Amino acid sequence: MNKIFIIISLLLLAFIGVVMRLVPHPANFTPVFAIALFAGFYLSKKWSLILPLAIMLIGDFFIGFYDWKLMLVVYGSIALAGLIGLATRNNRNIFTVATATLLASIVFFLTTNLAVWYFSSWYSHDWTGLFQCYTLAVPFFKNSLLGDLFFVSLFFGGYEAIKMFVAQKVVLLSSVKSK
Image (cartoon, rainbow, N blue to C red; front, side):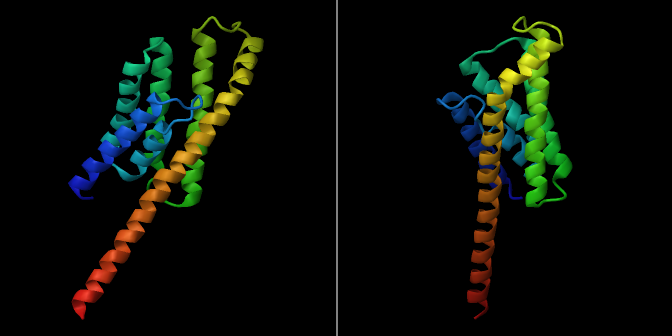
């Protein structure tokens, strides 16, 4: 990929990610996981990890930091989404993208709510408390999943549409030059 295109893509994704975390939105309906998956699919390994984590860090700087143990789990699950994108990048199709999105959403739900149950005093530290924690988190999971599906569709679909548009322009330009 062209370096200017990569730089513009990184800046645009970072801007979208940070702004969407700062403006009012339904809980957990943000593009961070979609950006992590997208970066894993289309950018280098370095950027698939740095970009979404930088978005979170910048957003948390403005929103406010929270318990470092919970932050570590949240950031770790986001890094894992980037790694899921990297692991599936050689099999680019709609099924792989949908599966990766679902997997990243489920991993986030399971790990972060386990961490909330384990590290906080909000729930009793027994099976009942764990069940209550996951049960009360279901609406947040719904928002996460819907947000991930929406933003993955937007980023991946938009990227592929732009690629097709550019390819058509190149074909048109080359046919005009050959005449």
